[in-house]
Structures are given as C-alpha cells and as structure tokens.
Image 1 (tube, rainbow, N blue to C red):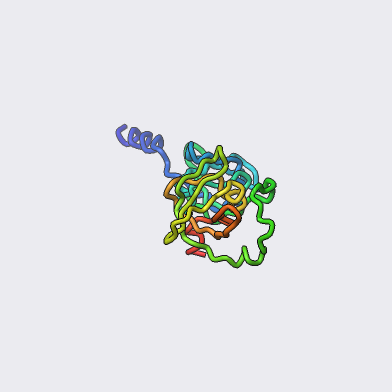
Image 2: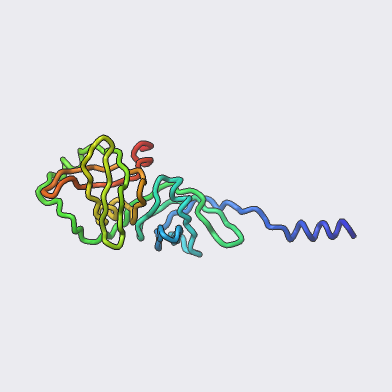
Length: 186
C-alpha cells in the first residue's frame, strides 16, 4: 500500500520541462515594460513565450515586432517558452524613416565603426532619446526608426550599445544601433 501511495505521488509530481529544440519564427509582439512577448513559429502551433531575461542573455532588452528570430524552446506545464535566443533579424517591412540621411554617403555610413555607448534615456512614446559614446562629451540622438531598422523597439537607461554615429546639421546622430554583445561577439 505504501509503495502504491509513493507511486501515485511520484506520478503527480511536476515533470521537468522538455526541450523541443530550435524554432524559427516571427515576433508577434514584445513589451519591454511588461517584460515579455510572443513568437509565432514558422511551422505553426501555439505562440511561444519570450521573456525579457532570455532576450537580455542575447544582449538586448527589446525586440521589434515582426523581427525574425531563431530560439531554443522548452515545453513547460504553462506552454512553450524560449530558453535561448540564437539569432535576430530586423523586420522586413519597416516604416518610412523619419530620420533624414539624405546627403550622407551610404558607403560612408556603412564604413563607420561601431562605437561603444550607453543609453542616457529613451522615451518610446516620444520616439527618441539620447546616448553617450564612451570618451565623448556630446550626446548622440537616437530615433525610434533607427532602432526599428536595427531590430530593436525600446532602450533602457544604462543599456550598453554599439552605434554608428554621424554628425548632421543638428549634431551627433545614431545611424545604426546594435547591442554591444552582438558587435563584440560577431
């Protein structure tokens, strides 16, 4: 009788999460304030939870809606969850850029070195913010369109970035933004 009770108890215990493997998909939505979002798998099925901590392990604190993503997924009692981000590609369909890069040589922009920076502040609702490049006194203007083109949707104060910075009529401007970890690892 005691053995059967023990068997029943062990069968009712929570089972460890099962790894399902790799999954390619698209970010359905991600809210950095809430700290999570969902990925729709290319192969279909239920949405996969993407927690901000998993994204931070990849070196980002946000991701743009519509971005392509490759993740390692684990099945839990609450559904499928991302446990590791392996690859992110910015969305194919980007809004028309408000930031005017006209007059700048595209080859010169692409050749600019990524520079280490920290976010000073960023307001997603306003669509802009500022960062400081290490070793420079000038603030660098960050526009939300540049973030979206880089596959990001929001930034947190103090977040480490890598930026291609240009000098325009109004001062220093980020032409491209990436997580610092992505640039030094790549």
